[in-house]
Structures are given as structure tokens and as C-alpha cells.
Amino acid sequence: MPATPAKVAPAADRPLLGIALRLGSASCFAIMAVALKLSSERGVTAPEMILYRNGFGLPVLLAWVLLGPGLGALRTRRPLAHLTRSAIGLVSMVLTFEALILLPLAEATTITFAAPVFATILSVFVLSERVGRYRWAAVAMGFTGVLIVMQPGSDRLPLAGVLVAVAAAIGQAGVAITLRQIGKSEGIAAIVFWFTVATTVAGLLALPWFGQRHDATTWALLVAAGMIGICGQLMMTASLQHAPVAVVAPLDYLQILWATLFGWLVFAHAPVATTLLGAALVVAGGLLTAWREHYLRRTVIAARPDL
Image 1: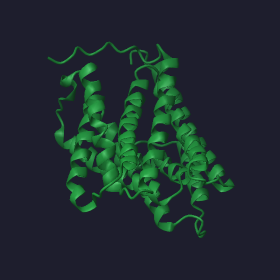
Image 2: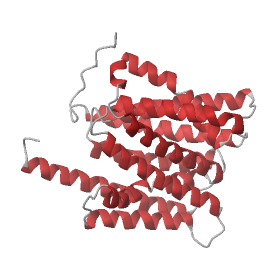
Image 3: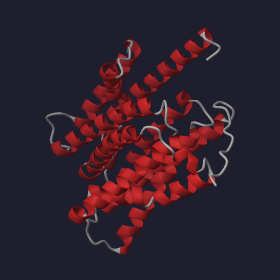
Image 4: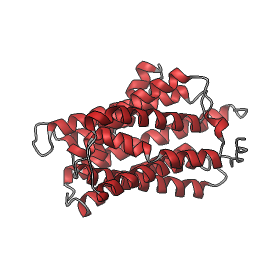
């Protein structure tokens, strides 16, 4: 018998807990990226990362479902929508992991964090959303930041890595758009669970072509990446139960700071001025978008107190 869903506190009831969970989430994702990049230096390919990141995280996710919302939360009325979301997410995840392999940690993280820029652009064409001057200004800042990090015409970063990272950001934007659509009728537990299952199966299917033998240290890195990554995903989800999106979402940019620090300490990639400047603009664009969304939502609620 499924466990009775726990009563969730209203959004703004425990903001400090929400902030703490989001900080933990950003830190988990940063540590996961370090583990995956270290494993890539030991011969692990991006398709293998897909399998082990999701496969080793699946037991943790299932335990969370059983102890929390219960198996009933996994029921879905839109299996094809989950399939579409999983396909886009799978491509995005492969590209993101490939960017980690090809680029220094800070640069890979900064470029892929331009996803909100592309999500805003896609929302105009896919969702027919109206985008005002503030959000277009945020797009301009974020895009400029990405260009500064990429340094077109320079050979500091491999072109293939830059193109893969940009494609990953576009893919993540596609995921964000898909989640806006599917999230209207599907619960968070179902969305996360079925995506994790789908990507694990996809990884298993790719294993005969990309699988390799690994030593104990490499396996330890992969297990850690899977378990830490799913913990980060769960903390990110839980943060929204205790604090508004506008409060916690900007904290995701802590990952860029962690990536820069870990890239320096673990991989000896000292941050360069262009990366720091570009990252600052990407973060500024993201924060402007978050602020504008928060402002518009407060305006709507003030005009419609029944919402």
C-alpha cells in the first residue's frame, strides 16, 4: 500500500529551509560534475555517464518515493509526454556530459547555464509567450556573457567543446519548455522517476557499443556521481515546497562558483578574466529574469487575490 503523501508546507512558510536545500542541491550538482569529469579522464564515455548517473541514482529515487509521496505518485495520464520529455532530456544530458569531457569545468558549466537565454527565445516560438524588454535585456546579457566565455576566433577553447556546450544549453532550454507543458498535469515525482528510468534504459541499450572495463576508483566515482546527482535533484525539488521559485532558483548559479573553484583546485585550470566576466553576465541575466518573473507574479496576485 502506498505511503500517505506527507503534508507539504506552503511555499513561503519555511524559506530558510528552502534556501538551504537549494544550496545543497547546487553543491551536489557541482560535486557530481567533478566526479564525472574525473571519471572521463579515466576513460568513461558520455553514454556510460548517462547509464551510471541515472542507474546508480535510481535506488535512491525509489526509496524517496516509497518513504514520501508513495508509488501512487508515479501514475501518469500522459505517457507520450514523458517519452518526449525523456528524449529531449537524454540528448541534453549526453551533450552536457560531453561538454564536461571536452572543456574545462568552469567554462563548460558557464556556457550550459545559458539555458534560460535559449528558453526565453524558445518560449516565444513554442509557447507563444510575450517577452518584454526586461527579459530581452536578460537574454542580451546572457548571450553576451556566453560569447565572452567562448571567445569566437580564439583557440583557447576547442571549437567542438564550445559547440557541444551551446547545444547542451539549447537542449536544456528545450527541457525547460517541455517541463512547463507537462508540469501542468503531471506530478514532480512522476516526471523525475520516469525520466530516470528512461535514461537508465537508454544507457543500457548503448552499453554494448560504449561500455568499457573500469577499475575500482572509476567505479567509486561513478557511484558517487549517481547518488550525489539524484540527491541534488531531490533537494532541488524539495526546495520548491518551502520557498518561492524566485527565492531559490537564483541560488543555482552557485554551481558556476563551485565549478570555477573545483576546476582550479582539482584540475589546475586557473580561472581567466574572460571566463569570470562572461560568467558574471550570464548570472546577471539569469537574476534579472528571475526578478522579473517574481515581479510579474506579485503584480498578477495583487490584481487577482483569488489566485
